[in-house]
Length: 397
Image (cartoon, rainbow, N blue to C red; front, side, top):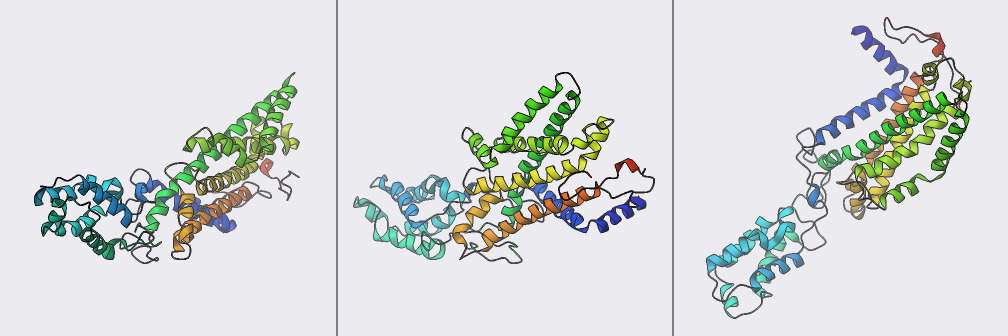
């Protein structure tokens, strides 16, 4: 065990940037896994309720709901019945209940019912657009609503602090909990797209490699290459939009097109750029020598998937329930008043992209040793046939 730990430490010293990228990926992996199912993740952060992220209560809504409740009340309604009426959840609806405002509003409305100031108005048959009702709601407005363009909850738009590491949004949600809870969506899409794309592309390349020496293998390989070239010529964003036109933006609707984008990339790395090794003595040798190319493609597809998923979320076509792209778009309208809403989400997203790039580059470098390496763990065999160099043009020399 100690020998392998020392070996791992030597690898980290040899590729410090790749080791740092691995730590970043492990950090977000732990947070993303903790957010699946329970929401909010680790470190004592509560669940981030996605259902009410974009909902905001305003005075016009309160006036409308109260007017509907009082407009149909009979003229002989009792004080108890009126109190029960205004305390019913149906009065304010799930909209108010979702943002936790129902009980707060009732605290201001019910005392007015208690001193029977509404009873004479109802007996007169007047609609509830009355100064008394308006006065109560304006009193509630002082401590709760302010106006339709201001935050609803007391903890809204708070800057980063010890209690809220990434600050809060316009309705008082903890932004750190939001970033953690939304981390798994983009991560899952990118990982699935890279795994499916690289494995599927490698399978297609192996089939073409096996069929090449056969009688009609050249024609089959040429047909595969033509299909993949056409797929490569189509801009990825256009392919994604075409697929999303007939879907609801689910996880697989984004994953499969992104995986398809990887197929021609893998073919090009394994077959076309590896033409010098196509005639290798065995298929395992062929795959082993092209493994660094697969790592680079996996890294690029993963980053590409994360970027496209975020871009589609920015324009409202992302996968449900949402991702960091949604949070970045959500905070754009508050850039001046609360820049941390977009900044924290953007920094988290950027760190994940850089982590993928750094780790992928470090792993590719480790898989392309310049001669036998002394960094192998104790007892590990050294195969001189694995030594080759990788030039700037990504060609074997």
